[in-house]
Image (cartoon, rainbow, N blue to C red):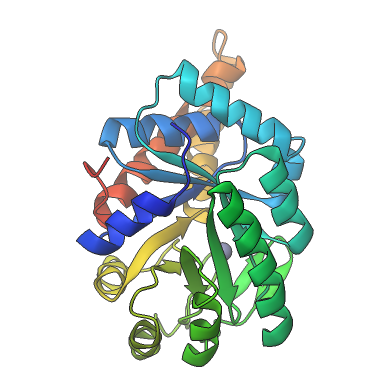
Length: 287
Ligand SMILES: [Zn+2]
């Protein structure tokens, strides 16, 4: 069932667990995430970056696929279809295409322009009953060409954006997209506490969930993180499983070249990763 992320995030905040956002790249990815969420009775957010949407032909194609798939698979747990790091135009296009949840990332603008554009997108989402995530400051690493440096968000800026009425807020606490560098200093929990104290009622989002040690994830959840984004980890698991299949020469045996066989180990690897994360985030059985 495709729904806004509002209720699932509010419930996560109340019960102190996190909902996983898993980014999707194609049909197999989407199916793997939805089936695992259903099996785990976990609420889930399907993240779609603008790059991934473009790869899958456009927001409308993605929305149509996800809607039809949830019906065909009988997915009864709440699932939100969420644009990840939406630009001002991208967010509007995703709203138009029928996404149920929107992230507008205005973090690369100055705070005043970020506030102004965030306010507009939040109002649009509210009118349509969609959940909305905004971002303050910059989160490190690279996602679709947006580069940051593991920055820390300013609690005052967080407060100003939260007061616009966001469903959830992405604020940098030293997290980075992609693989973490060897010399990464870890999450900045003092910064997280300052942000949480500035906006105690606002659910926080942790981006760059790949490779953050388990204890840090759990501590972040205890300090108010209600949504954690996972993207790279599923990609790495998919690639490794596909590599093992090809290196073992299985694509050369019988009909091993059939895409339904060739992509199966990667599909299973995504399911395993998603399940592991859901257990870690504490969202299993919450739907
Ligand atoms: Zn992100």
